[in-house]
Image (cartoon, rainbow, N blue to C red; front, side, top):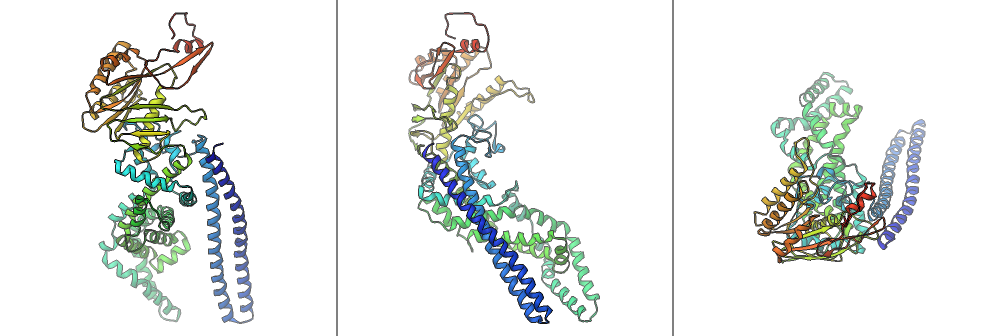
Length: 606
């Protein structure tokens, strides 16, 4: 067990112990609520029985206030109990990530895109993905922001700002606060409701602007209705009260669709707004040294009220609006007090005062959640390096580079260096020797570097570039597309990309594998020559040893590297170590023989 794994285990145990104590205290206060309620009922009954009406009413009011205070105390204790429970769970999840048990985490397959330049080939999203390994966000906005950072490299200045921010959050003395921040949203249910869609919908609504006369009725009609009911109780005619009630009923009927729309749209955001309020309060109360983090926090106060207060207001409005769910309450509130209309008015007033501020604040919160995920990832992997962004075109200089999704204790790391435009590294190797994994290792660490995250290496210096891969091309029956044609389409995109000025770093696995050896060889050589003349460099893996001859044709631009294997009896041994030069050991014949295919003995190795 490594040091971080042991630390997370100790944290989980400590939080679990505190959780048990908090659970006991919460249970005791829960019983106190019952005691207060029963004591209040008995006390009031005794006073009323003895004819002491005033004392009875005072006791009801007093015990009611006491009950509310105890109930709030219990809510705080229950929140703390759940917080400790979630913190313990979070640390156990960190252990699962270190051990490669990623199947329980959200891979966000919604972000998978076979047309994207690299995410599908590099296992960025989906099962057993980098997203599962890094993501700690619970909210939809946090997940979306992290996914965007995975999909799009940041400009170098932004990468450097993120590195500094992540480094601060990853400090040991920040872990208690950081883990608290990560679990805050776990207290709430997060549905598929899209916050920005709700805000866009709300911006398009304006019930009171379209019907200005309605605003006056909302404030006057309930008062008149209550007054007429009181007058009826004192012996005046009830027709006036019935008339006002009928008007309210007809208004409710006329605007039934708008009332239902406002409620249905807003109630789906209730838990999300509570979550955002809790997260923002936690963030606003902290101070930071990193410029990016300090900027995020400062921007949260750029309004009439702090961002947490602004979004807390709409959470409260939605909560009151939801009282309509009770049939009895809805009948009383909407028949006499125009309840729905009041809270629709409050929502529209909130929109005018705070919508723009809250939208901006949630952008900042999403950025923070993505940074928090990267910081937790960095803290869990202290041996990972902070990459240096190079100014030398296409420089990739790595020491002990490895794949972050390989969790074996015997994970093999390699050193690798290249630089300059028009450079192609041809990687040959026997079956299962590691050449494809190495290409993915290079690519996935570039993605990490360009988003501002640490990389799985002892040291990495890398130049900014657009990563492009062609590895998992497959046939498509629906489109009547063969795997070979799918690969050609992928290569066509690469050629189109390299016609521009943006530098492109390509990773091509088993190039043109879907055709005969003669065409494959001719096509691969033509592609390398074409890319050599463009603002592009990269790696190509192949079984085609003849491609290695291009090192003599383009000695300053093509280099050969290889992965090798050895055969000992019925065993094939791999060292998964990158070597210079063309591969000279192959194992296809031996693999077929081990699978039961009777191979004739030849002098060839495989």
